[in-house]
Amino acid sequence: MAIPNREGAQYNSLQDFIGFFKQKDNAPAFANLFSVHFSTPPMLQSYGAKYNPETGDLRNLLNYYADSVNLPSKQVTTGTYNQLGSAIRYATGSTFSQISISFRVPRSGETRAFFEKWIALMANDASQYTDYYDNYVCPTLRIYKWERGGGELAIGKRNMLRQVRDSGITRYTAMTPKIDQLTGAYELRKVFPYNIGSIQLDNSQNKLMTLNVQFYYERYRFYQAAEYSSLLGVSGAITRPAPTDNETTPSTDPVRQSGTNLQRRNNTEFLMSGNVRSSVSDGLT
Image (cartoon, rainbow, N blue to C red; front, side, top):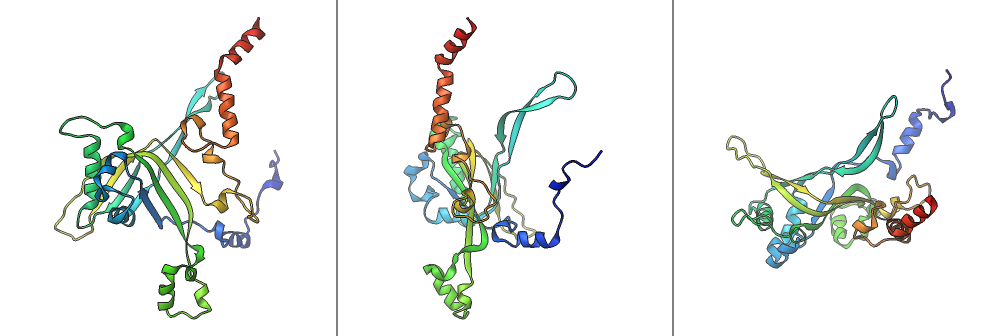
C-alpha cells in the first residue's frame, strides 16, 4: 500500500528550523518571569490595607515572593458509545484541576497571616459557620506571563532611564535594551484557598521558608497578547483570531457578549421555548 498524501509530509530542514525559532514570536517560552495579582474578597474589604492584596506591601509580597505556580490543567470528560466493534468516545464536558502557589515567607509572616485570616473568616473553626460564597471568594486571580526582551525600548521608560545611564553604555547601544514583553495572562475566577501547606522547621540546615497554598476556583481563561490574538495589522501571522472570551456560554459568563454570542443566546432561548416543541408536534400530526 502506498504512503497516503506524500506531498503533505514536511521535510526536516535544519536551516528552516533555525530560521523559524529565531523569529521573536516563535522563540521558545521560558517558565520564569511571571507576576501574580489577587483581587480583594468582599469580606476582607472592611479590614483596611493590611488585608488588601491589591495595594501596598501585601501586593508586593504575594507577587514578588511567589516562588512557583502550578497552572491549571484542563481535561475533557467523555462518554462511550458501542454498537458493534470498537467503542466510540464522545465529549460530555470539560473539567480542570486546582492550582497551587508556593510563596517565600517574609520575616513579618504577612503572607501566612493573610491566608490564615482569609480562611478564618471563610470557615470559622470556633462557631463552625461558613460565610456566604460570594462574600469569601476572590473575584479574580490573574497570573501574567512575561518573556525576556521583545517589549518597548528601556530608554523610553522614565523609571528605566537612570539604570540605562548608570550602566555606562554608549548612546548607540542604549537603543538596544528592551523591557520584558507581556505575552499572556491566566485569569481564574471565584477563587478561594482550601489548603495552607505545612512548614517544616529544621535546625540542621539554613534555608528559606516557603509556604504552599492550594486554591479552588470556578473557571479560568487564558488570554494572549493582542498581537497574537488578532490578524489585523500583523504580517505573516501564524495564529488565528481568538473568539470573545473563548466562546463561553453567555448565560454563565459575566463578560459582555459580542453580537455573535448574543445571537447564539437568542437562538438557545428560542430552542428552549415552546415554539420548537409546538412546531415539532405540528409536524408529527
